[in-house]
Amino acid sequence: MFDFFSARRRPTLTGRAMIATSHPLPSAAGLEILAAGGNAVDAALAAAAVQAVVDPLMNGIGGDCFALYAPAGGKMKALNGSGRAPAAATIEALQQAGLTDTIPHENPHAVTIPGAISAWCRLHQDHGSLPLSRLFQRAVEYAENGFRVTPRVAKDWAGSVQVLGADARSILMPLGQPPAPGDHLSQPLLAKLLRDIAEHGAAAFYEGATAESMVNFLRSKGGLHSVEDFADGRDGATWHDPISADYRGFTIQECPPNGQGIAALMILKIIEGFDMATLPEVDRTHILAEATKLAYHHRDALVGDPDHSGDVVRTLLSNEAILRLRDRIDMNRAQPPVLWDEPEHKDTIYLCVVDAQGNAVSFIGSIFQPFGSGLMDPATGVLFQSRGASFRLIPGHPNAIGPRKRPMHTIIPGMVTQNGRTVMPFGVMGGQYQATGHAAFLSNLIDLGMDVQSAIDAPRSFATGGRLDIEPTIPQEVRDALEARGHRVNVLKSPMGGGQAIRIREDGLLEGGSDSRKDGMALGL
Image 1 (cartoon, rainbow, N blue to C red):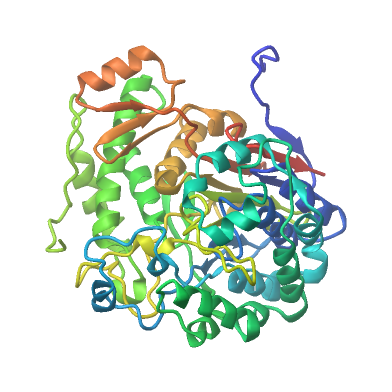
Image 2: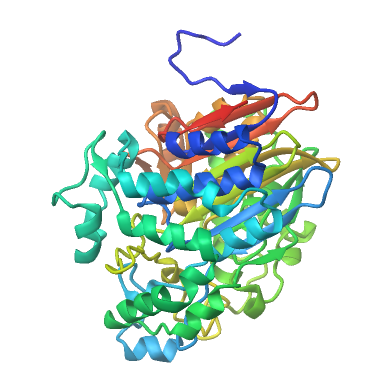
């Protein structure tokens, strides 16, 4: 029985429809659409639009998104709403601009053509039921008349304002300082643009005066963008088949590369060889860390735009690759990652919806770093992402920047199925952490038998940059044991990411969870 004195959040249980987001206003907007007869796609788009207004650090119409859509009784498909580099973006061009190693997030060359609006409109055109003007109603209202800043958004805002350029500061910090919890903020320019998109579709963003304004702004900062690049982005969102792997009787579905869903599946297949259900916490944390290092090492070396890097999914998920990687885990010692075949290659929002008809949407959007590039066009109010910072400047690398290439993406929506039945849309926010987060959440749920909310809220760890980041809720004795195995433990001062999920029981019960690390909630009918 649940301990009602624990002060922990409980799962949300309903029987008809549900939405879970990381912010109360998008959750409310999506629920309103579901109550009005809208479907899961309608609710997801309404929530995403609101979140673009009320949580500008994490996402916006100047960013990208991905989605998994599972129609009731139909075939699941993956939507790639990631933007492409400008046609003039080459390694040589960036080197001439003085970039020789990496692309800084605050640099105009980190701005790829935003893919979010193309994806929103494609999703709506193919599967929406209510008009965009209805779906954007709350978002327009909050942008025009203002909204109250929530506590977690205010915390993140205060820690990231150094990224904002002067134009962005004038709109997002009108009083010259970050908003405090409860402060009022509006974005009238964003309201106008959302109205235009609702009326004229993606063309209102990618063509005409809006596109010309964005291009002129980016070029004034040194960017290589053109009106042709934006025009090409209008129909840039593309449907694909998901990639998948089985884990203890369930099938885990992810978007294919250029996303890092492949890394999440690799981690799951590696840890499947261990009895995670009976191992102590220190062993589970160690195994997850070692599997993470191996999977991410391959991700960074081999994953990029599949139009340019080939199909690595079958190779990396093969039994041979997984067995050889698993054998490299030493239970007594942290090890450096090694490529399995030694080849020659040298802050986000997530939401999910299940509607009364059984359609399910797993949706994730991002502008990459908090506030993305920090560059905002003052004429349109569009804050641009920094996803191009993921590109490499190494000739021949699968993720090397190139004309109209998509960069490797960290944002990944997930979906669980079993014997063809949709079991659960889920996702974990947190930048690079997301693939590890998918594996950890699912292991909590499947191996340890946690409910959805507890599996989301459980303490987190992440092996990255030669250290093991852990949340302070991991006990001291576990930290000591991890250090004894060679992990360089770093205790975080801020929570690691967030997450949402909705589990669909066979009897129709919906069990939803929304991460207590964020401001959101799961709401249902």
